[in-house]
Amino acid sequence: MPFDRSQPHNDLPLLPPAVELESKAVLKQAIAANRVLANLRGLAAQIPNQGVLINSIVLQEARLSSEIENIVTTNDELYRADADADGKADAHTKEVLRYREALYHGFAALKDRPLSTNLFIEIAQRIKQMDLQVRAVPGTALKNERGEVVYTPPVGDAVIRDKLSNLEKFIHADDDLDPLVKMAVMHYQFEAIHPFPDGNGRTGRILNLLFLVEKGLLDIPVMFLSRYIIAHRAAYYEGLRRVTEEQDWENWLLYMLRAVESTAQQTFDQVNRIRDLMEQVRERVQREAPGVYSKDLIEVIFKQPYTKIQFVVDAGIAKRQTASGYLQTLAGLGVLRESKHGREKYYINDALLAELVG
Image (cartoon, rainbow, N blue to C red; front, side, top):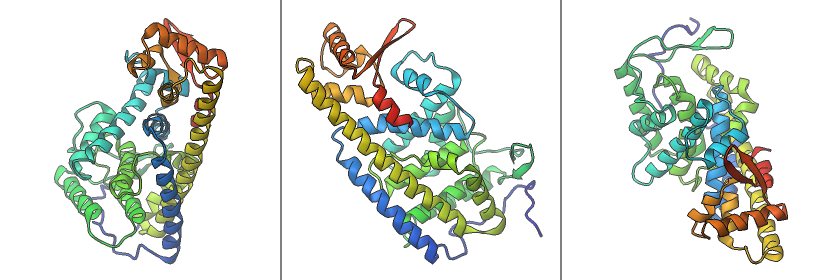
């Protein structure tokens, strides 16, 4: 009997799946993905101030993960809003910034407690800025662009919580599954449970990164999985569907392992370029403007593409008038570009911006 997409999938199988997950092809791809991920972890550990990476790279992941849900903002709006604390950004930009806040919250929480249903809920609540809880009422159905129902997730608070409890046990089970294979299974199951009224896709993608941190495969949550999903969106949804309707785990696992390998390599290359760029700028400022040079000042202008005088003051580098002179000097060298927006003055690191959005 064919799978009925319009009926709640309350008989979503519990984990672990009753099939052999680690086929020869899956294990081969897992080895490749683990190798690249280890390279990224090692490189990131060499960056003296990891805040430079976390702040800017995570914001791009936030933008792209939100774009999958049709929440779109421009890089200019996003980085300007990130530099401002006045909360005047448009609704979409605010929602992207909340994604990063949710990721930070989860990352900090892992220091004290493992991944759990309660942490899933907290992450979703931060993304949506509302008191989200597990879905208690029926009526949720996932539709395609033509309005056709493609999947109806389980319904009922008790049913959903039971499946989330099983997911928790699977995440923390002492088994010999490759952690990246386990992450791919976890991601499918979370999206299939679809526990919240909204924010499930973004919460699920945050959980991928947190799982990699929890398992020690990354020390900081820097990786662009969303970029791969956007580039291969049809295959992503097709992979989810085929697990649900045909128990085709192998193709799904291969998709996610390729996503990890590809995005870890892209992030590795990007971190290298940003590191080289920082070093070039550091040497140039030290040579051409030794009076304003400090290691801390270089880190400030690389923490985010849009710098303000106040950031230099807050970093304890100089008082306001001197800080203004420092940034003016860097603008005179062409390291930064001065830009006014309303009454606010920004100093934009165009080279860093190009690396982040390229």
